Image 1 (cartoon, rainbow, N blue to C red):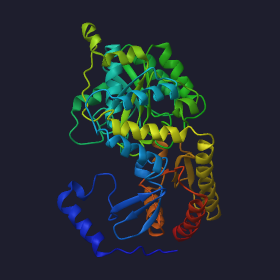
Image 2: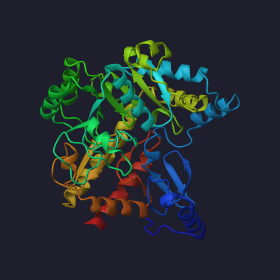
Image 3: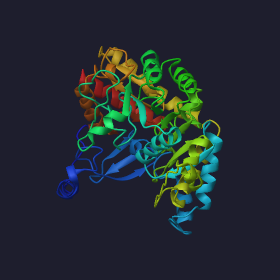
Length: 428
């Protein structure tokens, strides 16, 4: 097992070039000196020639693996016909039809490029529909990088509920007054907040699995019942869970149907694409016909729904809906989760494996993880050390989350478990 991954002159040169021309020396996602240049299946390679088993998967989009031949073929075939038109095209129509068939809440679809765009438009759609401004989100929930999304995403000193605090410089102070913050998995506190503010609420947005924290039994169903009682639209942010935990997303997996959902990552197979899907009456705000009622939301997007990304997505969905695909995905993730749980237990290291088999991570604490505040008890320094130990041994992952793909083989899993053993021994 190679624990001294070589760093050559090419890697140093790329790293130095990045420091000179990229703000922060990176794309803003991961800050390390590894420069990737190639991906194939469940493996990636850096410019120094090191190969890694990939559990970052582009932060989730590569659910079918890197460079899947069917996805590549679909993209190449479409490129021969044209890359983008800024106009409605055959591939985007076919993809919208597929999303409507797959997602329980979807009656209409509108395409964007990024997850941040999708959640921003979903929030705007419910504000236009309800003619109200106030949004409720959950502390620790991540909905992209726009101003509303960055309210109480990762507060270092969380204030009392429902006060929101910005997680970035440059956000106008007035935005905090338009967002209420509730604790995830706490239906009692959430009920009190919605009951008190329902007349002013435009909508509620939630990750059905918040980052890695699964909903406790009855939480999503209780939230759905509560929002229906007060006619407040409910948005499931399924950027991560959409087409990952089930073909119909978390709304199928957990059996709760929202009014709108947002989709990206696994949907697009590595190509830039996102979507808002949901109830026709709420989605009507995207139509110019709603101008007369004052509810029109113009949405111009140069690349949203472009035929190349749409063709890639159609190929991905063809692969995902084949019999046995999700059984295999879950079995792969389950083996890794169970191995980690046993190894940490044998090593007497307090740790919890949190998430669902297609995406999970380690929390170094013995405190049950049910929401953002309980997650603060975890030892972030130990997680970073564990990540570094894995990296040195050829397992690539992000700062948080281990994403599983259908491209991970039994051999990949066996090798990863051996890496886990060695890294945990060093960590101990």
